[in-house]
Image (tube, rainbow, N blue to C red):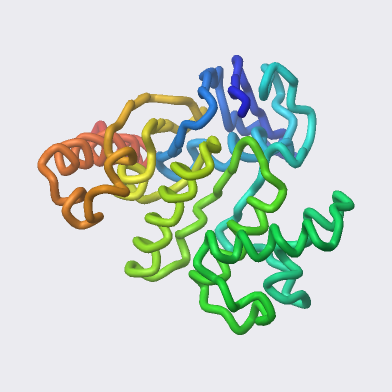
Length: 267
């Protein structure tokens, strides 16, 4: 596994016939391999922009990102991406979606078949390999997206609000699956979310990002993800220390929102 390093990253979007948009300013951090980092903050704080730079989909205006000492200059299979909507190939079956990466990497049919069966079991979809994507629920489709990402054996898994479109019960089950995969695989995970509760529950490290320009406002080291597989989710989230941290972060974000809406000075 490889450490990730972000040094002095800036991102400025040039808008035709308008003022440039400063999406990220002087973002720097180091992430040791095997950590689960959650990114939280109001809309416009650059969470997804940062994730896309880490994925190699965007080149920063300034600064650099390295993984294992190598500068990221574009997409690579050592970084896997899971989107809010699974971005699955609708015309392929579940097993063919998961097998796509290994097939492109010219793995043998036997090796690919064994890997697909293993991953279907890991994400709780054993027996669903021959189903079409459109036959699955939203939660099941996200399980396929996770399995497809894992099939390439990335060092870092990047997740852009992967649970945002799910109902509350399915979302909580998927949170448990993410924690399980994190602990069992030892992979680094960076997850963007708008949910304070989700960010606290999943992140063993959490960044609260501020907007205009986007930057890291707060950096938390958290114990909840480590306990998430041993304590029932409802019990953990009802704990006083969890509630206190949730209220602290909500207050920070609420103040940001007030400033964005121009109400801060009026109160």
